[in-house]
Length: 190
Image (cartoon, rainbow, N blue to C red; front, side, top):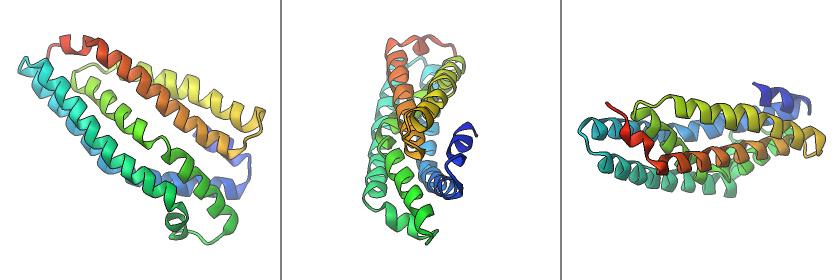
């Protein structure tokens, strides 16, 4: 909602383009969310069976598949953003904003695919505190101020908001990888 508010300060075409692109992006996320939820289930089952190594292997394997899927989708969106946006609007200014958003955010798809699986792995291990803290920090305390700074203070406009999404997703993934590799989630009782 805060990102929508920041984008809205650049006019109706920017807001419409952002809304359109986010709709396309979220639609493409649906199978990836399913894969990350499956990873959570595999973690819970493996930890319940006292097999933490199997849980870890399942997470890395699910991450690979999710990265392959979203990597391909991201590449398609980067290469053919105009085609997808053209299915929903013919207004030049709206389309230009939607294409920019679709392309910029798609650059983060590969890293976000990894991050979403790792976050769900914590949930599958029964650790809901870690994902909550990661999301609070990366999206509320990092992404929102970064979006405002890039868009308004540094003058990048809506593209600054789109870049902040990629930066926040990358930070979330880095933090998740570090915490996941520490392995404390393996000690949870299921």
